[in-house]
Length: 333
Image (cartoon, rainbow, N blue to C red; front, side, top):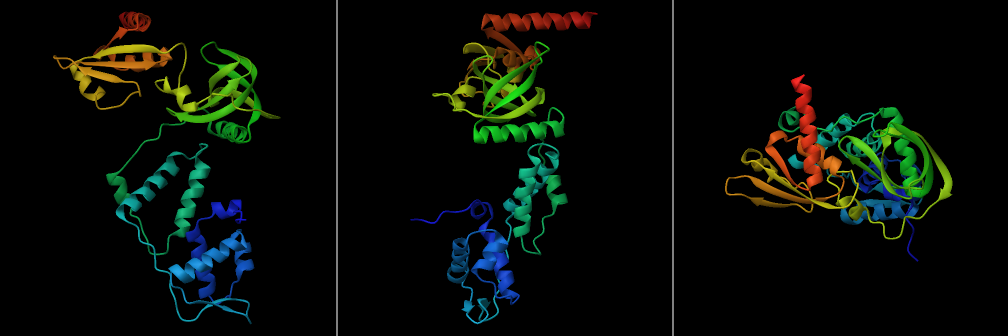
């Protein structure tokens, strides 16, 4: 039978353990398997593999002293210092920037934990000029929607529910109807999109899989009862017909004509898996999508103003025509 790895074995990087063992041996503390396993919170089997790695692959002059019941070096030995490539320095910099921008969000703690582990493993003398890199690279994380503290608590509860498959009872506010309902849901998946967190769950009240915004969950209670995900449910397929996160109604073909000015930017991006594009002789671009949730498509198309014209479906064309009329009326006042 093979040995079973503990949670800590998988969670603690080997490089951290190697440096720790080296420091203990170099300091003449004569560490042994049980003491190292206790210090590092791993199994003795893991320590044995680390010792073998030090001795065989890193050529460490490691021997065991039976009288002092521990390991020692037979001659002076140093673990070669780590060096960071320019690409690795950039990755480290981006991690630091991401941590700063996610402060107060549900992502902060796991990112901070990973970043601290990386920094702990770096030997002294390795430096990253963050100020220089900041002049070269930058990236943006949209401000998180909702109260950060309340959202973090809701996120942790739902993450536990998704992992353990526990049902949740919640008070949910529906913005479109300005109405609050109490319902039980089976949480399937948590998704971050456009600066907001969403829960994909089976709603027992509506008897279908629905999407809930975490910042609109007024109260959530983890229930003891468990559930099984519906047979045949596939997350990729479920979200595949949406332009972003919104779903609703049957899948329809959306055909949009972008003028020559906007066409040059539209053709540079992949907006949806189903998209098909066709350039016209005058430089305009015809875009075809097969999506559900036309409200999200409508908001997206309105952002292009007069540079986009909906050809199909007729219902979406009419919706945008009415919206444009309302906008004209507002400005005419």
